[in-house]
Image 1 (cartoon, rainbow, N blue to C red):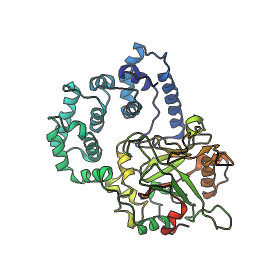
Image 2: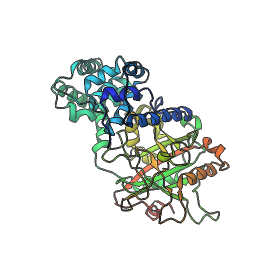
Image 3: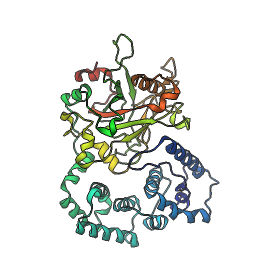
Image 4: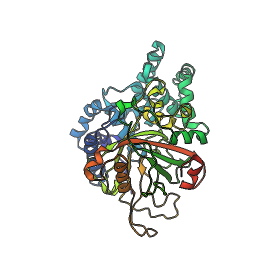
Length: 437
């Protein structure tokens, strides 16, 4: 039985050991590994029935939150999702102390909190700050993030008298941002056209201008998914010379591999723990070691990062053919980036799916990472080791020897594309109509 922790007892120590150290969505493998270790150790301690938090540690919380409030909020939200915390707004306010939260982060705190009829000074300060900012027209580059947090919080805050006029004003003054987020969050699903997918796969893009050419001559993975993420996706790959990758020397059998982009049930792509956002992700090396093998499997995890933010997503569009630049299929990754999703990976697992009737068997869902099959199952003669095979193929497709020492050199782009709403795993035969065979 999961033990429910009070906010004051659980989160104070948690913030001493956070697992995300990303600045603007990026992390070094070494720092990511260190903080993952600390988070793993901490979660185990939190779940021990003998765990107690002394007052001295509790006093450390405000200063820790001040050092990295973004990480603090992410970890808090993860524990709320796991049912380990029941935060109230006044506890949030006291715990975060004088942490330099942005306006969007303050609204996020309110969204995550259990609000009472009188939420005290914190909410009043946020309302006043939003009012001043709107009056002064100083949102600037933060406008999209603030608008998103307000839209996300609208079901909670939209019934509170002090928020109703502010929400209406935001909707009126930022129609483009509102339309973009609402289309991504609740708009009707619009799959890419046949021509858009063909162009995405077939056209060779000049990527020298993006990220100083880091991805110009690197492999690209195309991960085709159903809109219903409960079903496995299918990966195909192009090598550093933009040629399709085959399984055999005669080039008669295209290299493909299944994968899963499913997150915590009931959560969407914009939420911590939600499914892997559609769109483009950078593959930026691997974790230094293959640790936490129960959760992540025996092989090193591939680090995923979002495409850098730019005005009107001009930088992002460098990675898309002209036919795709006005399409909607990639917007999820933009929203996810702007609201702070991070620490996504491609990895295996040390666990076994015990339910052969699940739609994604033998995969296991993650907290938003791309999942790979691993371990021995009755229907397979040999144990699955898809992550090992993926790492090797990425190195070969980069013209590197497939050896452990070259894994950190892995770089490339991952395109996650939802092709339709069928209720079935994606197979290679589903991709023939796009010219992929």
